[in-house]
Length: 238
Image 1 (tube, one colour):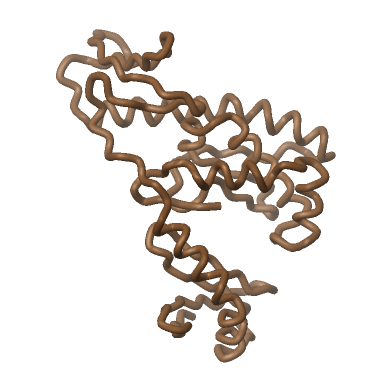
Image 2: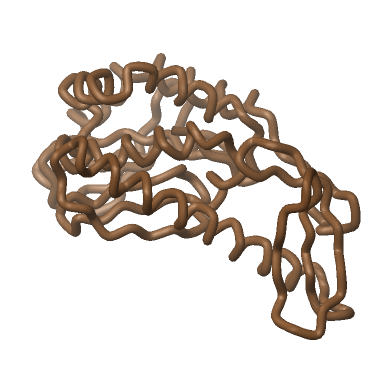
């Protein structure tokens, strides 16, 4: 069931699901408000809950409006691209073989067939970013699962429009955004730990925060660093 409620001039979408608790989300890039609520909960009760969070909702929407955006990419010669927080200049070379991406000093070398258009160049580089995240994240998941006393979950890496990562405790799996390959390595580690801790505590309650402080005392600093960095035009926060 889908409903809509007004919150001081802000419209919120309410989705009733077979869940136990209310979940409030402010979605980038425009701050759309979505509330997931248990099927048995009255709409007025949902509205009262949302109004109690109105200051937080407005704060999130303001942060999204002010967040710096990356310029659109054309994948042309000497265009700036970021890998693990460092800036590289793109260099295009022709190849008769399979496309490749390599780092040489401060240059990101993209080898593609002659005449390869923007879509092909973008796809090749996107796959490379995905592989970068998968390689580093696999090692981090293995190490942090030992620390947290967890069995390693399934790891998925993909482009995500509104999140840096997600966790499904019931499926024992985590998902990571390919865009993390552009950010400093500490940001990836923070997201990996964040999602693994959700296997111990699915919500963002005080128990979750206590676990994060125990295993990564500076987690809030890393979150602020990540969310202060420029994002793609569709944008997200965490």
